[in-house]
Amino acid sequence: MKFITNESIKNDQFIYLSGNQAFDQNLLLDFDQHLVKNTVSFDGYTNAYNSKIAIIRGRESKPSIGEPSDICSKVLLDEKLFQMTWLIINRAKFSFMTTKQKVVAVPLSLRDAQECNDYFLAIKLDLYRSFVGFWTQHQRFTRRCNPITCSKVFVVDGHQKANRLVCQYKNVFDDTIPEFGLVQVGCLYTPLRKAPNIDQRFCQYHQPSMVSSNTVRVIDQNNKEISLDKEALIYYVDKDGRYNDALCNVFRGGVNNKSKISSYGFLATFLNCSVIVGFTEQPCSEGSKQTVINSFTIQSKGSLSLKLSIVRRVLHHILTILQFGELPSAMCYDCACTLKLFIQKHFGTDNMKATDFTKFLSSLSIAIDRFHAKNHKRHMCRTIMRPDDPSHHNIYDSINTQVAEQMFAYMSKFKNSFRGYSYPKSTIFFTLLFHLKNCMTTGISSFEQAV
Ligand SMILES: [Zn+2]
Ligand SMILES: [Zn+2]
Ligand SMILES: [Zn+2]
Image (tube, rainbow, N blue to C red; front, side, top):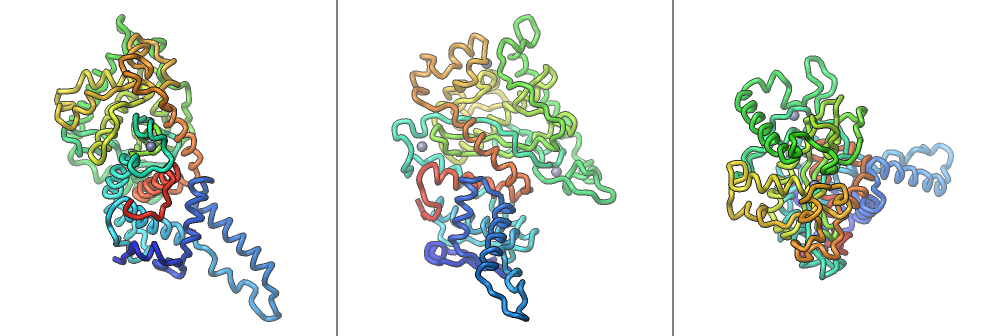
């Protein structure tokens, strides 16, 4: 292990971690700005930088006879090393800002992919904990938020545009929230590429030859999830026993892109000031290659259960954030009616044990955001689920309930940067990207320490 100190980040102009290149901190900072403001990729940035340098050198040099003209070509910006250095330096700056840490350990060699992946896996949860803890309290240090409306409401939404190939093994469960039992989360690893005797649908850990044991328990759990979804489904069925799409037309219309190679996406929670306070990567492995359905689009009764298993994941996502930070007591979600019914049905049962921790959910004000509210036709959706209903005591007044849509529109511009990342580097990248975006939203420099 090597170490980076807060003093070196604060005072030194150049950073050397490993390999044959040292980096000017201003260059890394330049990339930060292009990343957050122009949604540039590492590949695009290093390409542009290198061709710029080549042209500048061409203009400036007057090569004399016998001098090799490509003398400088070997020291251009190396994409892989630049990317890894950027990740490590920003990981250090992140901890110096969000914690009282003054030193962070970093991998010895940035070119050793295995060492870096092990490192990312080891720090992932700590980083997320600090991220949630820090940004849920940004009201304390923001320089840009409106003090009257800052952090009054949180908005949860799903984002499906970050397509990349993920392992199709479903039976990975999370058990970190005891009140909620096991929740199917799927596998985030990249499937193995072409090689003899491998199944390309699965990652190195879930090849069929390796996962035959333990099947019985997994099937039990699958059945439990399916029956929970069916129970919840009853709420969507009209009194005459048919699912009625016109009743509560909450599902965005028809994107069913068969050419997409995976349905990877994420769930995210924002405060109404556009600060992102939590995210959960989702392999959404229900979809096969042929039937990838946008997990927030329901087109038939058959795929309705897909939407409902997402309700459990949304609650799991919210509770995970709550473990590390506080959330306001009012929430917006485009499918808030299902969520509310699900909580009413299951709170206090084995599916959602009533404790001091989960009590938050049963006392939460839940409303449909203003944009989607018009699609909801049921009685409850036209009354208590509306943000402006008197039962909410004006809590949603002057609140922008559209922040999630706006932020996702922004994030969909990162398609190119997202695609190149595989787990666990993807998680670290998202954490740092969202951190920098939040820094800009709140007017904080990424160099500030122990805020
Ligand atoms: Zn704020
Ligand atoms: Zn896997
Ligand atoms: Zn509704």
